[in-house]
Length: 187
Image (cartoon, rainbow, N blue to C red):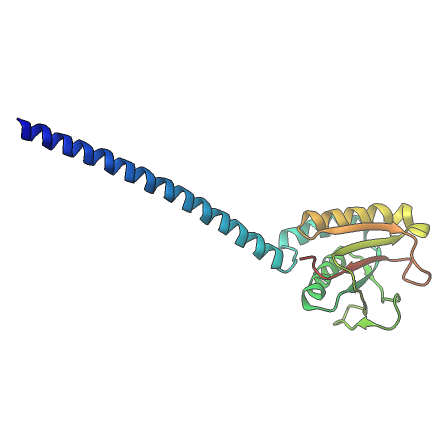
């Protein structure tokens, strides 16, 4: 009888010990899973920060649809000289041409320009960071102001942060056009 009790006590002690070890292992697993999730979140955030800015087909269609309300709007482009900014400029240009906007030649900033494939006129070179949609406030605040704000919002909603600016532009700098500056990506 003593052997049975001793066997039961040993089995019970082993069960308690095993449960304690198992509990510690489970806690370690939970901590490791949390660390893995945190690392995955950091990797995803880094990938998003480094990814090129782009407009999805759905966003392009939406912007085209909304900007068709302003067909005939004159626009000029400037871009930072790097492939990512130039590609985004061409995406925005394509959308606005589909919305029947009219592209004009860049006349701001001297003779530093980007030659583009037909049917696009030359674009300017800009050294800004981010995307700006601009209009001359002294000439076109009433007609271009709402368009500038709406386009900047549509781009931002599409994942391309854009700033609307309506203010005094320098003389002879495409003052009768909406200017879209596609600068270096803010990383």
